[in-house]
Amino acid sequence: RPEATIVTVADGCSTVQEVELAGSSRLAGRARTASRPVPDARVTLLDSDGNVAAVTATGEGGEYEFGDLTAGTYTVIAGGYPPVAEKLRIPPGQPCVHDFTLGYCDT
Image 1 (tube, rainbow, N blue to C red):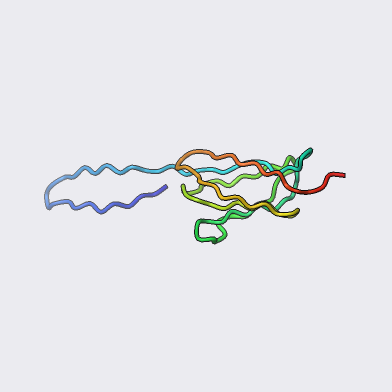
Image 2: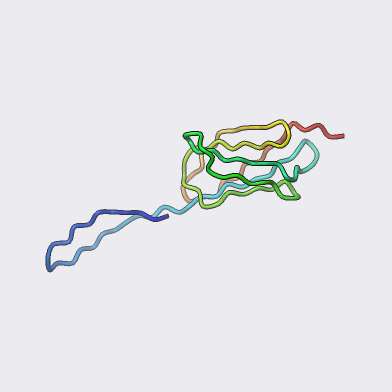
């Protein structure tokens, strides 16, 4: 992730400035019922202000993924069946895994 820092360099001098860069985070997981994966479920990621940060659909095995996330608090919602919403804290520069169990009745 980019970082901006103001550096003052005196005329005719050189300056060294250290800057710490934070890596991006990733959230991934699966949506399933009690007995099987749920393909094509809509998964929505909301930022801490409730704005939509990203939307995806689960794959054939119920898997979903959001990449290049800034660390912070998000709400992740799985829908397409009775929806499930859960608040998560995503750490800086680390992967986060969160699985859903949806309340869809198996027949």
